[in-house]
Length: 252
Ligand SMILES: [Zn+2]
View (cartoon, rainbow, N blue to C red):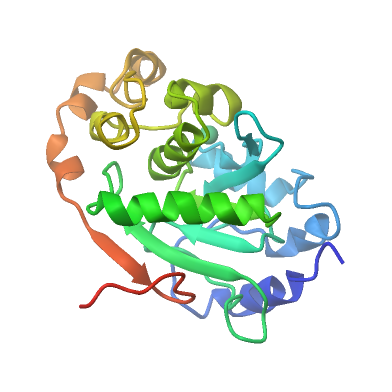
C-alpha cells in the first residue's frame, strides 16, 4: 500500500543503465528497503557509500517541516530520489531520472523545471507558480520530493521560497537548520530569494564563511569559488519539459 508506486521505480531501475547514461547513484538493489516505510530507512549501504564519495549528504536529509504546519517536503537528488513513493517528483537538473509515473496508468506527477547549477530561475513568475502549486499539493496531503544534484543550491532555493510562502522571512536560516546546512549555495540565489520572496539575506553556502572553512582543509581556495560569477550568470531555464505538465507550457 505504501509502496503502490514502487513498481514503476523497479521498472525504471531495470532499464536505467541502458537509458540515458547519466552518472547516478545506485540504489536499485536496495529498493526493498523502501517498501512500506516511506523511504526513510537510510539503510542502503551502496547508496550511502557512493553518495559519500561525492561528498554529498542528500541521503541524510530529513524531510523539511514547513513552518506553522505539520506538512513536510522531501529534498535531495533528482537523479536518485531518497523517497521512492512520492506522489510528486520535481527535478531542477536536466539529469533528472523519470520513473514514467506521469503516464496515464501510473498515478502521480513528475516533471523537470530546469535551473542552471548555482543559478536562479530565469522566470520568477513561473517559479512562484511552482511554489504555490507545490504548497497546494502538500496541503492536499500528497508526498512531494524535489531534487537537483546535491539537493542544496536549486532545491534549497526552492525550499527557502516555500518556507517564506509559509510565513518565515528568515527562510534560508530555517532551511539550513531544518533541512541541510548547505541549503542555498550562491549569492545570486540569496539575492533572488530576497528580491522575489522577501527572504532575509545571509551568505550563500558556497560564498560564505562556512564554505570557506569547509574547503580550507582540502587546500582549495574559497576565493576561486566566490569569484566565478560567470557560471552563475549563465542561466538555462525550461519552463516545463519532460512528462507531466502541471500548467500550460509556455509557447516555444
Ligand atoms: Zn545536504
